[in-house]
Length: 158
Image 1: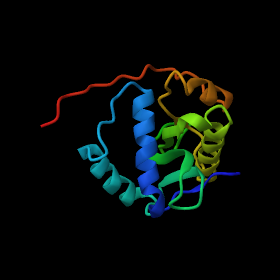
Image 2 (image 1 turned 60 degrees about the vertical axis):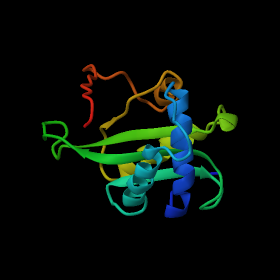
Image 3 (image 1 turned 90 degrees about the vertical axis):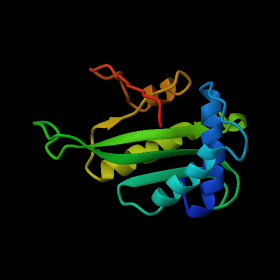
Image 4 (image 1 turned 30 degrees about the horizontal axis):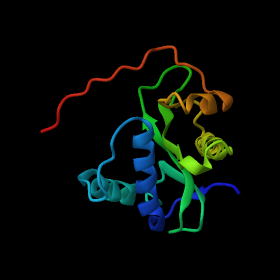
Protein backbone atom coordinates (compact mmCIF):
# COMPACT_ATOMS: atom_id res chain seq x y z
CA UNK A 1 0.00 0.00 0.00
CA UNK A 2 1.38 3.43 -0.88
CA UNK A 3 1.61 6.22 1.69
CA UNK A 4 -1.11 8.86 1.76
CA UNK A 5 -1.14 12.46 2.98
CA UNK A 6 -1.99 12.77 6.67
CA UNK A 7 -5.25 14.42 7.68
CA UNK A 8 -6.23 16.13 10.94
CA UNK A 9 -7.95 12.85 11.95
CA UNK A 10 -4.47 11.25 12.03
CA UNK A 11 -3.04 13.66 14.61
CA UNK A 12 -3.53 11.36 17.64
CA UNK A 13 -1.65 8.62 15.77
CA UNK A 14 1.05 11.06 14.66
CA UNK A 15 1.61 11.95 18.31
CA UNK A 16 1.68 8.27 19.29
CA UNK A 17 4.28 7.57 16.59
CA UNK A 18 6.29 10.60 17.74
CA UNK A 19 6.43 8.97 21.18
CA UNK A 20 7.60 5.73 19.51
CA UNK A 21 10.37 7.67 17.76
CA UNK A 22 11.45 9.39 20.98
CA UNK A 23 11.57 6.09 22.87
CA UNK A 24 13.65 4.50 20.09
CA UNK A 25 16.13 7.36 20.50
CA UNK A 26 16.39 6.73 24.24
CA UNK A 27 14.15 9.65 25.26
CA UNK A 28 11.37 8.88 27.73
CA UNK A 29 8.21 10.30 26.12
CA UNK A 30 6.51 10.52 29.50
CA UNK A 31 2.86 9.95 30.31
CA UNK A 32 -0.08 10.30 27.94
CA UNK A 33 -0.85 13.75 29.37
CA UNK A 34 2.72 15.10 29.02
CA UNK A 35 2.86 18.78 28.01
CA UNK A 36 4.78 18.05 24.81
CA UNK A 37 1.85 15.97 23.53
CA UNK A 38 -0.53 18.92 23.85
CA UNK A 39 1.99 21.12 22.05
CA UNK A 40 2.41 18.45 19.37
CA UNK A 41 -1.34 18.40 18.79
CA UNK A 42 -1.28 22.14 18.02
CA UNK A 43 1.94 21.80 16.01
CA UNK A 44 0.54 19.07 13.77
CA UNK A 45 -2.77 20.92 13.52
CA UNK A 46 -1.00 23.96 12.07
CA UNK A 47 0.85 21.88 9.50
CA UNK A 48 -1.06 18.77 8.45
CA UNK A 49 -2.95 19.66 5.29
CA UNK A 50 -2.65 23.39 6.00
CA UNK A 51 0.61 24.51 4.42
CA UNK A 52 1.88 24.20 0.87
CA UNK A 53 5.50 23.94 2.07
CA UNK A 54 4.92 20.99 4.44
CA UNK A 55 3.98 17.39 3.64
CA UNK A 56 3.18 14.64 6.12
CA UNK A 57 2.76 11.13 4.75
CA UNK A 58 1.35 8.15 6.62
CA UNK A 59 1.06 4.47 5.92
CA UNK A 60 -1.58 2.29 7.50
CA UNK A 61 -5.27 2.64 8.12
CA UNK A 62 -7.80 5.16 6.96
CA UNK A 63 -7.77 8.61 8.62
CA UNK A 64 -8.19 8.16 12.36
CA UNK A 65 -7.20 4.47 12.31
CA UNK A 66 -3.90 3.00 13.57
CA UNK A 67 -0.86 3.89 11.48
CA UNK A 68 2.22 1.82 10.65
CA UNK A 69 4.60 4.63 9.67
CA UNK A 70 4.84 8.36 9.12
CA UNK A 71 7.27 11.05 8.07
CA UNK A 72 7.35 14.74 7.23
CA UNK A 73 9.11 16.99 4.77
CA UNK A 74 9.18 20.73 4.54
CA UNK A 75 10.81 23.37 2.45
CA UNK A 76 13.60 25.31 4.14
CA UNK A 77 14.95 28.60 2.87
CA UNK A 78 18.66 29.39 2.62
CA UNK A 79 20.88 31.88 0.86
CA UNK A 80 20.98 31.29 -2.90
CA UNK A 81 24.16 30.04 -4.51
CA UNK A 82 25.41 29.02 -7.94
CA UNK A 83 24.02 25.48 -7.75
CA UNK A 84 20.80 26.13 -5.79
CA UNK A 85 19.82 29.51 -7.16
CA UNK A 86 16.54 29.92 -5.28
CA UNK A 87 17.98 28.83 -1.92
CA UNK A 88 15.27 26.26 -1.28
CA UNK A 89 16.10 22.92 0.29
CA UNK A 90 14.01 20.08 1.60
CA UNK A 91 14.22 18.66 5.09
CA UNK A 92 12.95 15.25 6.19
CA UNK A 93 11.99 14.69 9.81
CA UNK A 94 9.92 12.45 12.02
CA UNK A 95 10.37 9.32 9.91
CA UNK A 96 9.19 6.47 12.14
CA UNK A 97 7.77 3.00 11.74
CA UNK A 98 5.85 1.40 14.60
CA UNK A 99 7.90 -1.38 16.23
CA UNK A 100 5.87 -4.41 15.07
CA UNK A 101 5.82 -3.08 11.47
CA UNK A 102 9.57 -2.50 11.09
CA UNK A 103 11.61 -4.29 8.47
CA UNK A 104 8.85 -4.33 5.84
CA UNK A 105 9.93 -1.31 3.79
CA UNK A 106 7.40 1.13 5.26
CA UNK A 107 10.04 3.70 6.23
CA UNK A 108 11.57 3.54 2.77
CA UNK A 109 8.14 4.00 1.21
CA UNK A 110 7.59 7.14 3.31
CA UNK A 111 11.07 8.48 2.43
CA UNK A 112 10.54 7.82 -1.28
CA UNK A 113 7.16 9.57 -1.20
CA UNK A 114 8.59 12.63 0.55
CA UNK A 115 11.56 12.82 -1.83
CA UNK A 116 9.16 12.58 -4.78
CA UNK A 117 7.05 15.43 -3.36
CA UNK A 118 10.10 17.67 -2.85
CA UNK A 119 11.43 16.78 -6.31
CA UNK A 120 8.05 17.77 -7.76
CA UNK A 121 8.56 21.21 -6.21
CA UNK A 122 11.89 21.47 -8.03
CA UNK A 123 13.96 20.82 -4.91
CA UNK A 124 16.99 18.61 -5.42
CA UNK A 125 18.90 19.34 -2.20
CA UNK A 126 17.33 17.39 0.67
CA UNK A 127 18.73 17.11 4.18
CA UNK A 128 17.96 15.06 7.26
CA UNK A 129 19.46 13.90 10.52
CA UNK A 130 19.67 10.11 10.68
CA UNK A 131 19.46 7.85 13.69
CA UNK A 132 21.61 4.73 13.64
CA UNK A 133 18.50 2.64 12.93
CA UNK A 134 17.39 4.89 10.08
CA UNK A 135 20.74 5.40 8.39
CA UNK A 136 20.56 2.26 6.18
CA UNK A 137 17.11 3.31 4.94
CA UNK A 138 18.37 6.77 3.98
CA UNK A 139 21.53 5.47 2.34
CA UNK A 140 19.45 3.03 0.28
CA UNK A 141 17.35 6.01 -0.83
CA UNK A 142 20.47 7.82 -2.09
CA UNK A 143 21.39 9.99 0.90
CA UNK A 144 25.08 10.43 1.71
CA UNK A 145 27.01 11.91 4.62
CA UNK A 146 27.11 15.68 4.12
CA UNK A 147 30.28 17.61 3.36
CA UNK A 148 29.91 19.77 6.44
CA UNK A 149 29.38 18.39 9.94
CA UNK A 150 26.14 19.18 11.66
CA UNK A 151 26.41 21.09 14.89
CA UNK A 152 23.86 21.91 17.56
CA UNK A 153 23.72 24.50 20.29
CA UNK A 154 21.17 23.67 22.93
CA UNK A 155 20.30 26.14 25.67
CA UNK A 156 17.90 25.57 28.54
CA UNK A 157 14.49 27.07 27.87
CA UNK A 158 12.84 29.53 30.20
